[in-house]
Length: 634
Image 1 (cartoon, helix red, strand yellow):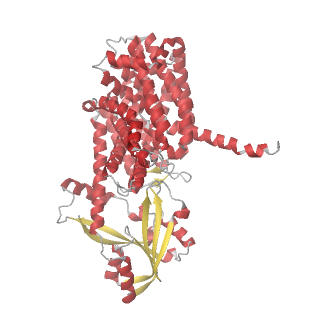
Image 2: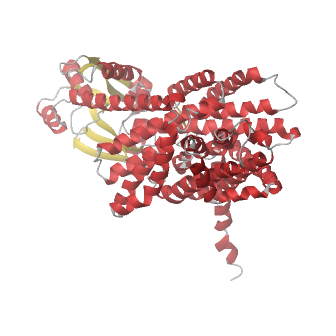
Image 3: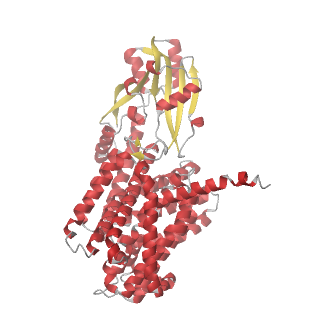
């Protein structure tokens, strides 16, 4: 028995080691955003309650209490304990949740699609704001370094811009090479901020009274005119919480939950308590309490560490924007865009050059236009709370339809979170006139693009309908066989039951058909990934006509060349050097029905012109592609 025990327990240490490794990775990628909130959240929140530099003791305790219970309610209870139970085959995020809900409801409910699109649009707003405010707040720490004085104050914005431009330029290399450092650096960050907070809490233990929620209610009740302004800033504490859910597919539920409960949540709590203790002891530190936690000799190293942490936080949200883009393309919400895989081991790591460029321009404009993290704080939060509310609404449907619970119970379960998020939303709407319009405009632009593309693509599909079924084509070719060309012809078609327009044009103009014709349909399903064993489906329509289906998940990039190799293993015979891929190149022309409207017509035409070539998107051999032009009326 003793000899067998090591064998039976052997896998457990390996499993534990892997889990710890994933938890360490999640510490950097998932918690970079929320982990850098202490740089500005408490400072902005206490600012509303300071009068002439003086801050009442009860108000300090109240603000810290609001922050602690915001972390507890929204992050710990909603995301960590509840929402992470609703995964789409391991993947999370608003679009993954939307796809899951659409699958169980049979695609019914246009509002579900609208909520998902809005959530994605708000995420893009967050992706532009997070790098700007995070890096600016870290570099502003240079103002607190006594040895530097105010000599670098005028260079805060240029230094921030230089860091951000460098960050976006290295995106094309992928997160794989630098990603291995994310976890350890952020782990050091959380340990350091916890230690700095603990020192102050030990010196001023009365701050622990902030753990009593009565302090939070007392502060709000004591300042009814400022309550919403304070809540709007307190909400900065939980920005980045959506990343817990969105990145679940990369690390798994257990490692993300473990990292939060064992490291991130305790570290954030100690740091916020420490900032509160510092201001209780010396109210003059209210202007920048985070860097005031550090002794003079450690201020410059802390600025360097904070800058590294904010770069990691920015990297995480930028990578998330690339993943959201990929999901939106596969779900038919965006046109084909160039996506480059940056990792051979992790399918989810992609680089979208166009999105990267748009984000860089947006971030640079924000840094130059607002100039400081305090000014940007007014714009931050609106997009995040919107994304949180969309996930709560979709979760109600998921509890009802996926878990099979009564609708009233599902609504009851999430109503406390919707109530809290509604109050935070009202507080953040007060920021609209002071910069909060920025993420709303970004979200509106993204939703407009998605809605326009979806409507326009549906019009194009309707205009391209050949009204000739595949079975009718098979009978036509059998009764009136044209001339035969050697080799294999692969015709891509979105509708497997209709004859592809490119095939009909080829017959009309060239009057030939190849020895073997493959009618290829690439399908995307509402699950993240499809195993190779389920990738290929074939149907022989005639002796030399094959209908082929390749199925991909919304987190995958379609690779037709690889799919054909799998089909060959299932009996499809072809020589790639004697195979031609026929595609349709569309030219849009004005239609009699008025199209989509003047603005959307122009936008859809722009999207069509700038969409990635089908040959590139589907990874077709570039020298074997033939494009046949066709005019399409909207």
